[in-house]
View (cartoon, rainbow, N blue to C red):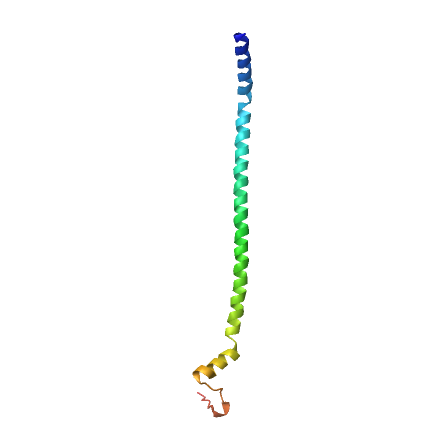
Length: 100
């Protein structure tokens, strides 16, 4: 009875030994695929986050350009020049041009 059990265990061990390389390879490939999948989702999330930040910065850039164009308009600069600096518009009849 013990002898039969030992013989059966030897057969099982031979069977396991025969396919162990296959199982090790399968586990290595499966582990590699799991790690790659995890890395892929991490990179995909970073791309999504960076795209969101880019869109926010683009919108802010457009708002700032709008502010620049509003602040640098000639009408606004003229009003500030008259009010704060006491400047007057140029009267070309009083201007003398000098030729070289």
